[in-house]
Image (cartoon, rainbow, N blue to C red; front, top):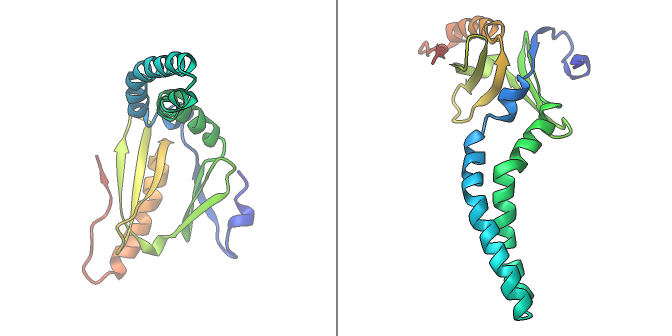
Length: 180
């Protein structure tokens, strides 16, 4: 990924990464489990609806279970396909001034968090060399997530340095990151 057009004047890139493909694609695997449990019921209901709709000339009986079937199909398989397609356009970067996240099916969304606005972070280890970093802005309830990073220590080292600088300027000396 070429970050140069997105950098501010005088800003330099310190770290860049992207999610591990399998981890990114299967990060919401519980949705698939629920969809797989729901799918047989919706197929049965759709079959009943089709047979009753054709026997009684009532097309609404065919259309009634269709949205539920499509939702179950999406939960079972569709979100995995979309996640894999989205992975192609997900990139992370840390500069000397900001944290950048580029994502979306066409890479159209760019999220930037200035380092001085970072309040804390949490690293959720997902293996020896894989982790997800949740970054919490100071004075905000939101969070910025860098999902499924391979070798996240490179990013967290830079975040620790940015936090040390930011915490020194805070009046109450808030918390730094933690590893879970």
